[in-house]
Image (cartoon, rainbow, N blue to C red; front, top):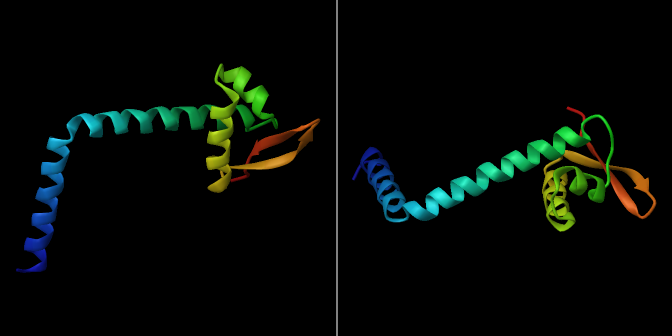
Amino acid sequence: MSEQDTAKQRTQILKDLRVVHQSTVTQTQALLKEQGKVEREIIKLIKEESKTVPDIAASLDMPTNRVLWFLTALKKYDQVREDGMDGEYVLYKRTEE
């Protein structure tokens, strides 16, 4: 079997799996879309001014634990950085591009 035939076979397997698991694929795509929207909103909030987790959560009307989860991921991928402290809370700011 040639490499091209193997590639076609793998592509067909993936297409078949997408059909079989359509509801899961649709649900996952919706979750990823929502995640991207929240990440963009957080970055927009902290682009100009550093904010704490509670400040961001209040602005987005979102639980603080969920905001912290997003900030942790954004920090891991160098989208945000810590920018000092405000009392007991860490300030987060958009990483310079």
